[in-house]
Length: 429
Image (tube, rainbow, N blue to C red):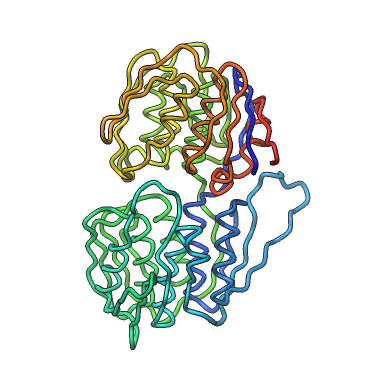
């Protein structure tokens, strides 16, 4: 099992190209099930989750190809995928595939929309909370689907097809918004999604679906309306830049000091997180080429944050920000409102010398002047990278084990950091 070794104490200086967003690429790939024509996606990150979803989609009958690298193209440039679901050969998404990645459950929407039936295993994914599928089930029921739970599978049937309806989520859910929006594009009549997720990845999916012929309005707001169409067609779409990767590297620069251009990044996708980083002492500027992040020798300031759905501070940056706050000059507090088990990285940060106290959903961090390298273990995707960030600023050597979590969401992290002077390497085990 691979691990990552980091020798801390080095400022980051240079350019880091930002990949396409994993959280956008996955639903975009799933959208290929909605048409028998080819959907071409560019700027797709090379990640384990992307490869896993390719396998799941091929099980349903999706043919795919990956375009080769062009002359002069950066080694870290995104890939181009061509996805064609001429015929859905199987409407079952089996446990052995879905259990490895929660987002694969989202195939339930396109499958029942196009084939009028689906049998999808209850999902797996990171162990950061229960994240029930009730919202998905209730949403599809509102579109006229008949649903049963049989032997760990959600069985959905819509004889005659889905029908437009009103779907109101009791709580914002990005995954459920993706799924119902995709399903509604082929439903008969109009669908209204109330309390919809406003995340940039939802907006990106809507843009792709519109390019495929869907009629959607209101994306980026809490109410989305979709007018169902008889069929969708193929399209070309570029995956939006990864705001979580952007925020992660911005926090790494704020942690270590230095001057880094996050190439291709967009500040409008994570205003709340960047404002928080400015309060912590980082200088952040949008440029024509991306986002410039700079912090000189000034200390890190403590900042209190609460995770919220977009446009608030993202839960997917909570662990990284906690790593930053471990070296702040004072006490900060982080309140996690999205997932109940997302403080599992705390005990590992403590191994590096962090002073953190947990009280329910709030973590209180008393900043320390020095972190010291130690062996640590990753517990989930975002926790993994928080330990790398802490290791970049710790004295001595930090070894992060179980980094297969990292490979699910960060494309060639050690290569990107090495470009900026970090002493970091992957150790195959």
